[in-house]
Amino acid sequence: MSKYLDKVTGYYRDVVNEMRKVSWPGREEIKDLTVVVLTVSGILALFTFVVDWAISGFISQLL
Image (cartoon, rainbow, N blue to C red):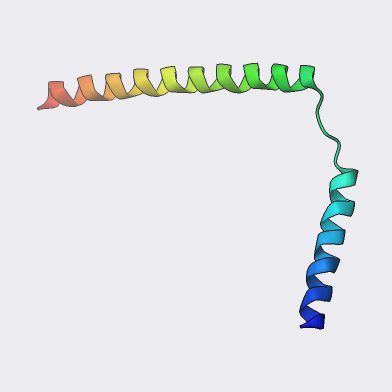
């Protein structure tokens, strides 16, 4: 049981040490990146809609 506890404790200690090295983004950077993600998602959704509409129209003309 002690070996298991030592491994878990060591793993937890390693995780904490690595998380201290992480460079966390600031509030302003998070806002900017959120706008980028939402904009790109909207553009991709619009593109997918247009392509789907065009392909549907083409297929309905064939049938």
